[in-house]
Length: 110
Length: 120
Image (cartoon, rainbow over all chains, first blue to last red; front, side, top):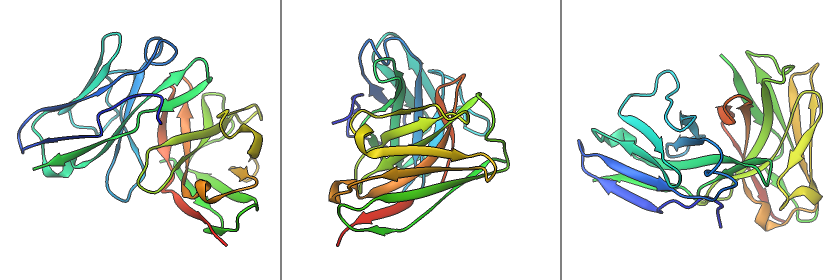
């Protein structure tokens, strides 16, 4: 059972916008920034969003993150077939003094 | 470009010790700007943080694994290592090494991962 809570799955059609939520507690999301990772099938996770809403170089601006208290959320606009992947939220946990992850959300592009 | 590569046995017997090494290339390991972590993913499941260390040697482990885990670093070889003792089938997973950026508390570089199966 993961510390952060995400929906197990979401789906959308090409061009649509989907959002993935991530909820936690005061010791993690409530007091620290949220990161998002994209894991394409058979590959390692890749940093997609850091510090709630910042994109690393090379990440398309179709991906955006936000956090207002809890939950945090990841939005993917202009959905493309290559966006099919598992998405994980993560945050530092002050009680653990380490990172915690969500259980992951599988995005299906119909 | 920083690259991380895991290496080690893909099969470990129950009750034995799992040992993996992560080799870092294209960047330095001797900075407190980042911490070096191990993360695992059981087949079909989510990510679990195992622990991290700074190049100075200070470590922190997930309490759920703390009694069985040791992470160490060899700065001369630009490698850091993971040992998990007394393994069971529940330790079967893809093990990733990753670099955490201190200022972001995010993992910006990951190894490709290595599957370790615990079975007799």
